[in-house]
Length: 130
Image (cartoon, rainbow, N blue to C red; front, top):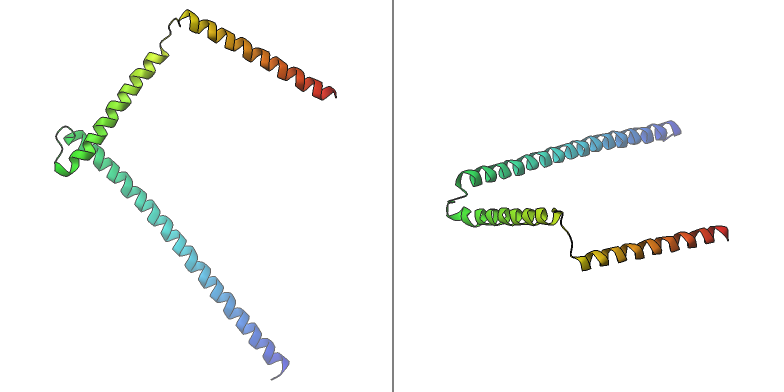
């Protein structure tokens, strides 16, 4: 076997390997594309399930059929808890006069925070000068 035959054999093997690599890359790319498409379809299914549940609750939530009763009760309970929380938030946001003792404590705490901030600023400036 001469040098030219050996070179041609190596060149053919390299070409075959390159073609196999390209084919493998194409297969992997297609697999990835199909997996992404499947994920998008699964997301569409989840959204459809959610929409079905919302529609069922809107139409039958007050008197759900047997298997749906527990889920509808959970939704109703959660909605009631959200409403109660929102009512409490509204109460807490109402401006009102805090008790005089509480107001004095708030002012004292604010002064302490201001003093601490000034002390930190002074320490930082002294460190810069050193």
